[in-house]
Each structure stands twice: as structure tokens, then as C-alpha cells.
Length: 550
Image 1 (spheres, rainbow, N blue to C red):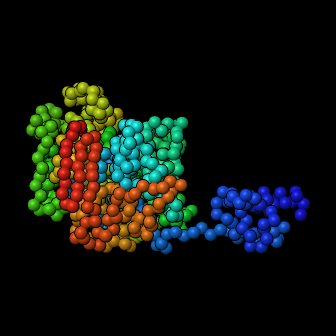
Image 2: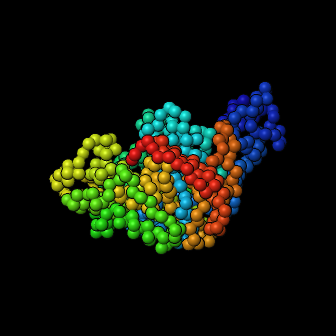
């Protein structure tokens, strides 16, 4: 063979045609010093002969590392909704999709988060405590202290990274909030974006920050900025459902032999509270008697449903929290409408989640889809302070009065404008306290369950028998990843991308699927946020409040 022919075949087949290519020899190139070149990563089984006719082509078989019946996995994570809100479990807000998942599966009434957004999400996606993965605070407040950098380390591989390596197709929709704010510009770096190599999702559609407008959000598709439609019919929660459904259909068309992992984390019901008027109007008059009585009603309904023990005592209102009786009568219509808008906002996003379940059924894959519906990444949020038409006034400590809000509303459409595109409204902290019934405090407070305890429902028709008895075992958001690994028979990897992995902190809760009375496997869990701290051990809880008051 001429040198020219040899070169042509080398370029065409991507292998070396040196003397070592006798029958059965490895086609990978090997230098004289014995160092194996990195290309190709997995040696081809094809053998190149002097001519194509004398060559043998054999396509590499992709290894199957999953059980034959590995389920699809869907995690639904709502934002800033507390323990006492969903009517599924005795609250005042209609949540038909959560009720559907609970009715088709099981529920947990002692499940916990970290009390704040980014830390909860980082713990969920890695199976590790939030400070172990650099997420002791939200991404916008990241600083260069160990545990607070906002950087999920490569030593803590995420669920999409690990599941992707095992053959899953992965996608994330909605709120991300796990990339340091300094890394979210067009200049990157993009390693910690959802589709970056440090995280591992195949596809992302949503927003990177902690919040955005539901009417005119700042969105990205993978690494590309997306401008949403500028029309009155657009709403981000609906967009998230539509895009997730479109992705499921593409998956079904192009990779039906691969299971999928979807992380669906809408911006609702984080502030600003945005929803169309007809959704808020469904709750008109439902909160007229204020948050104190709402809390008492919810408490009784929770006990009647068996969601909380019959001997539970209702915790008192914090001294720093206003009583409804202290709200001047002229301001009460404003405060009521803010809660009506919030309730409509929560129901609306729950209905959007239901569209995903409908699509799973339409595609014929619902029975073998494992669904985790986590109702909140923390307790209800008191960040609206005294009630506001512009939440950033409160969050930035800008002095303002309810009288000023009402005066501004007069020129913008009155109370009916609340929830609309001209507003960035958020309700009074008293409603957040009621939303965390029966516990004390709210989001941001890791020392009390009002900040950390959130309902969770799990459904997997093929693998979990429906059971109405609440699971009372103490569990945490870092337990989701090890649960998934156990179901799949996957050992948490020791090395990923060359990085030796940190220990998994979570404990699988799969043992409780079939037995609501099973002895809990989680014996210890700590909580910490902004100085509020708590630790659970063997049925006891010790905590200390402060120094931050929401």
C-alpha cells in the first residue's frame, strides 16, 4: 500500500495503520514509549485491513448500567410555600395536583428543607448538607468563606451528573439559583450553569436568579437568553409546563429507550406574587377574618385529617409578629387582597404541575415514573414585611408606609391591579406565619419548623402502593438523592470526572415506602441559616433563634 493510501485510510477510520494491526490487535494508537493515547476513549472493536473490503466494522455497544425497568424520575419543587397552605393537608389553598399525587402514593409530614432557597436546592441535587456543598446562603450573597462560596464543588456530583452517566436523559425547568451571581453574565464562566460540566443537565429552560417577574421574566434556554412573548396571555408557570411537556415529547420521539430525570422548579410562589385576576378572585372573601383565625382553622383541619397528631399544640405568635386586630380597618382590604392573590398564585402553579402528570399518562409512562412533589423549598416567606406593592422596598430596607402603597395603587388600578404586570406585590408576614401552621416562624428561620418543615408526596404506581397514612419519619431534602440511588441500585460514585467524591450526608427513605410505622433511619440532622441553628437527634430537637429576624 502506498503512503498516500495509508494516510487516507488513517484519516477515514481514525486509527493507526502501523505494524501492530495484525488480526485481533487493539486499534488504539500506542506510542513506542508504551503510553496509551487518550483517543479513542473506548477502543473500537472494528479492525482496519489494507482495503475496506478486508476491514471489519463493528459498532461499539453502549453498556447498559441501569435495571431494565429503571423509572423515569420527576421532581416538582415549589417555592416559598409553607406546611399549612395546601388543602391536601388541611390548608386553605386548593392544590388538586398535590392531592392527586398524595392519593396515588404516600405523604411525609416530617420532611425538612434548609429554610432558604439556594441551600435547599443544592442539598436536594447533591444528597449532601448545604454547607458541605458551598451553599450556606443564597447565590447572590455568596462570599469567600468555606461553606458559603455559592460553588457546588466537583467533589459533590449532582443527580443529573450521576444519572446522566448511567444513561438518563436530564432536564431542568424553572428557577435555578445555584450559580454565583458573578458567574451569571454572558462572559460566564458557564461551568456552574445547569448545563455546565460542573452540574450536568442535558437541557435547561428557566431563570438563573432567585426570582423573576412571572409576566416578563429573564429567561435562558441552555446558555442562550430568551425573550418571552410580550402579550397579556403569557405567564411563566404556564410556559414552564409547556416547555417541559415539549421536552418530554422530544424525549419520547428520539430516546424512548432511555429513562429521563426532570427537575421542575417553578418560580411560584416566590415574590413577586403574580397571577391573573380570575385566579385571585376564586379566593375573594376567604381571608376576611385575618391570619390569626386562619391559623386556628387550619390547625383544626390538620388534626381532623390526621395530618398532625391529635395532641399537637398550636404554637404562639412571635412578639415581633403583628396581630390581625392591630391592622387598621382602612388597610385591611389591601392586606386581604394580597393573600387572595397569593392563594390564586399557588393554586395556579399546582394546576400547571398537573399538566405534566397528564402528559405522562398520555405518553403511557405514568406507571413507571417516580414523582417527588416537594411542597416548598422552605417555609412561607415573611419577606413582604408589612405588605407591599414592591417587594424590593422591604428587602432593601427602604422606609415606606401602607398609606404610601395605597396612594400609589389609586393611580395604577386600585386593588384589582395587585398580581398584575404593574405590581411586584408580596403579602404581609402575618399570612406567611399562618401558612406555616402549626409551627413557629417562617422562611429564613432554621431553628424552627415554620422555616424548615414542608409536606412531600411521592407517587410511583409501579413501585409504591397508595397509602393515606402519613409517614412521620424525620427526613431532609438531602435524602432524595440517596433514595433515588437505592431504587436504581446505584452506588454513589467514588470518583467523578477525576474528582474524588465527598461523602453523601443523606439517608434513603425508601424503607418507609411500604411501612408508615417503620423505625426512622435518619438519626441526626443539623440546620443553620443566618445564625438560626438547630439539630435533630434521635427524636429530640435543640435550637436557638437569631440573630436575623425576617
